[in-house]
Image (cartoon, rainbow, N blue to C red; front, side, top):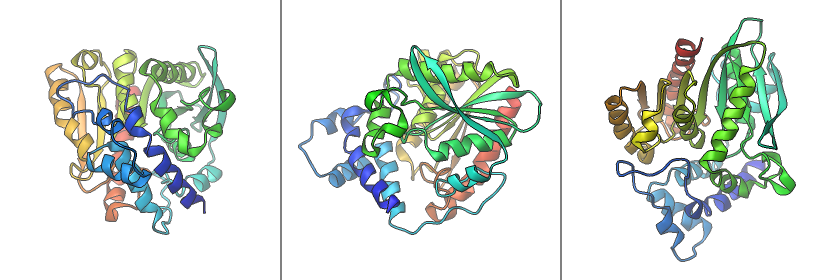
Amino acid sequence: MLRMMKVAVLIAAVAAIGSVGMNLMPRAAAAPSNDHSAHAAMPATTAGQHIAHLAAAGDIHANHAMDEIRWAAFARQAAPASASLPADDMGAVERLKASPRKGEFVTINVGGTPMRTWVVHPQGTARAPVVVVIQEIFGLSDWIRGVADQLAAEGFIAVAPDLLAGRGPDGGDSTSIAGNETMKVTLSLSEADLMARVKAAREYGLKLPQANGKSASVGFCFGGAASFALAANEPNLSAAVVYYGQAPTSEEALARIKAPVLGLYGGLKEDARIGATIAPTEAAMKKLGKAYEPRIFEGAAHGFLRAQTGANGANMKATQQAWPLTVAWIKKYAS
């Protein structure tokens, strides 16, 4: 029943995406065209028709929602448990329950707004890098908390902010927003507001006694774009990891990046809209002398780390390759 409710929620939410748009970064000629304004002017259609139209046009969020709908049609099981990988979305809750690590919610003040934030500490007393874990368009989910826990298992201090804090009814956060509004509220965040929140999470982590003074960011889809944007807006970031998220499309923004960026992407065919941004980003970063290493996992779908049992095994294969790369990247540049 919960899974079917989630499907209905996603259908209703994606119908609003066309008019909200992805507003993290300015658009430039090298980037794929922004189809959202055209969709907003379309005559009213059913939610299902609207999703299908957006997906056919290459909208990354509509395609992500279509994946969710397809997955919900099957009795999916959680991916086999592996201590060296994050749990997928079906196994995150049980993994969190069994975690030996200290995870807690804290409150961070961001310009007068209290921001609920999930923090997980690594075991032991060794000094550790701080990793900001940036959510998808689904808010601060159990899956994102599970990713944070896995990062702590790798020896990092993981800080996952609730980017929707103060945006819910009566100033609530992700927990107070009805599912069919979550994506719309997430996409309504201005870049300035988003950066203020992820920077506040980073600064909180760096003040913890166990922090070693270095920091990284890891984000997924919407959060992947935010991770890339943080690299452009925080000169002291040590490393950034971008899972299937778009890069800033202005050369001026890319020129500000100092942190090495690792990009992890689904197949060019399976995630064509994001795939089309990789080569232009790589060329621009090379021109600017910036460290950017894209890895493409052919056959894997957008959102592969969360849906590990999808794409006929390709998502799991991508997860098994991408996660060790993530850990190694952060250790190389932030330890």
